[in-house]
Image 1 (cartoon, rainbow, N blue to C red):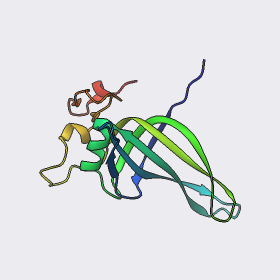
Image 2 (cartoon, one colour; image 1 turned 45 degrees about the vertical axis):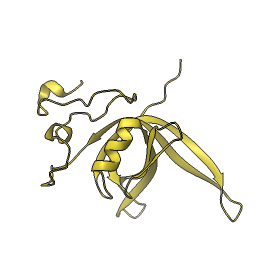
Image 3 (cartoon, helix red, strand yellow; image 1 turned 120 degrees about the vertical axis):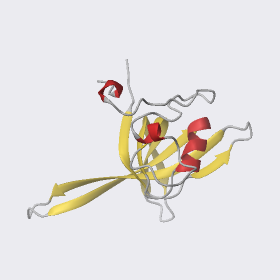
Length: 149
């Protein structure tokens, strides 16, 4: 048995890029920065930033492109893989890529009337299924009953 799952909570490093496959499926790409603080050898706190490239498909891709912008906080759940490539100087480079299976908007709801429902900001999933026909789930206000553990 094998298992590949990653959860990322961070901020978008750039605006989402939405495009469509020839078959008409929406695909959205963006980067997410995850920050942590660690002490160096001198005892000073250092900010460490890890970057992940995220790909979302179908309804989730359209929601991400519509509601997320650079700096938006987001929860992403998906499968992790490492993409290896060679740069212009001939050096091998590696990129962490996530194919998202679940996305949730985080943060405070803005005054924008086009923003998603408040449930999306209080823990409800938006397009939480990987299928294009999945309905948008709405949380009940983020109470303790919504916590999955």
